[in-house]
Length: 232
Image (tube, rainbow, N blue to C red):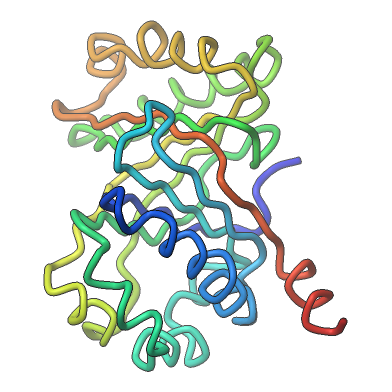
């Protein structure tokens, strides 16, 4: 089961512990249904730091990249609900990558997600992509792992949104995003320490400064799930 669609919205931020309970309530019961009501948004998944820290990782699987500049989606970004307006300032250190799916192997939801944010060196993008492709084909058969997906950011042609202004800071982006899913944390830690070690990445065409993280699943839903809930 590969990613749904040919695009993905990948985001990371920090959420203070005292806000986590309300944040997850809002995110699961208002925000996910709102986003999954936008035509082209197919699945929404949220993970939180596997070590118990403040980090949050969210990924939306999307039919195509142009959905990210659609009137329906941009309309929501510019008309946040009162609860969204209250919660947005608590999204600290936002990284928001609006991506094309370059490679998709195996499953797209599991107990753990390991992410690597990286950029290819000039003229070495093909080499780095081939490196990820070779590893991904092996990872999906490795005990403890179920899927691996490579994403590339492209900024859609839209102006700054109301939600961005509410967060009161410019969103950063990750150029390339590798997401590896699995059911065993040690297997994903090995991916990070061995397969995705800094030396291995740089030898295969990655620039310095990759950022990695391990997250545990909190909630995942599809557009069909939301539609069925609304109909009951």
